[in-house]
Length: 382
Image 1 (cartoon, rainbow, N blue to C red):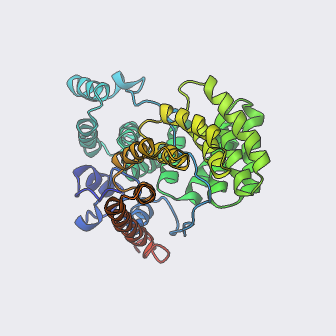
Image 2 (tube, rainbow, N blue to C red):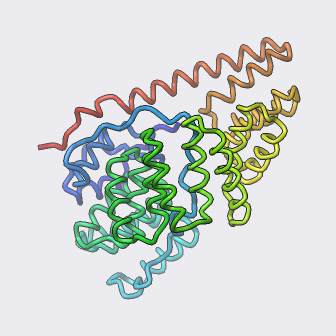
Image 3 (cartoon, rainbow, N blue to C red):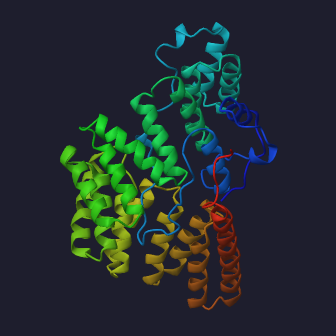
């Protein structure tokens, strides 16, 4: 987990545009969604008109893993169709267009913030700025910009969906639920919205409600691999492994036909088979997951566990080290490495990995405590 960024001009201008005093301590907006203390997120969003009062989040996590937001969930940032008609200088339009093409998001953000300062009544500028913030992983800034745009005119469906995703990333399931409910009512034929309602229900341990939503998504799109994958997670969490296997098998099969394929269906199925000690099948699926998600620490970690259980220790160490390299804050890879080294009588290496695991685990607890502290009592300023 990364620390907060220093105050930035973009955050200050957005907060001031929403009527929020630019207090230096409160302007530490991060590129990553969960590195900002939760009390700051609540305060910013409350002041921006995003909620009536702060809501409690569920501090627990489901027993099985949930897929992350995938690239197919949102559009690539591009200039709006009517961009040529915007009342801005031609050289500024060209600079923004080139900046987006080259993914020079800092430059585009700063340029758009200047436009917002000049014309705070422009919903188009706020909306485009929000899209760039989302691509740049500045999810809090994105949500604020979209709410500012929404005050000026109704959001397009794609922008409302982006707002809902921001709430998911910021771990505000109640706000996300409201947005997805609106989207589902307005677009009853789109399988994506009941799918996301199922995801939110799953995160709240409401597995039966989640199953209903995922089945609704499959009624609308019978070949949606993510819906089958998440159904598998629900059944696995309910200890119905027979149903989980059927769903995972269907998810993996459909996933192989869809490009780009996701690493999550073979990863989730492989993890279940690993727990059932079906090691050969698990290895095949986890290698598929590694191929599809080579930069995901979890794929390498789980494959490393399978290889260690097969007593292929040298191969296991390579995968586990790769997991630790991809995410230096990931404690579990070091614990598994410690166990492998202990089994191969390398006590000094085992002790070192165990020490690293303990330090990272404590740092993780400290971050979680910092994020949760003060959250329930926060209220919008009077």
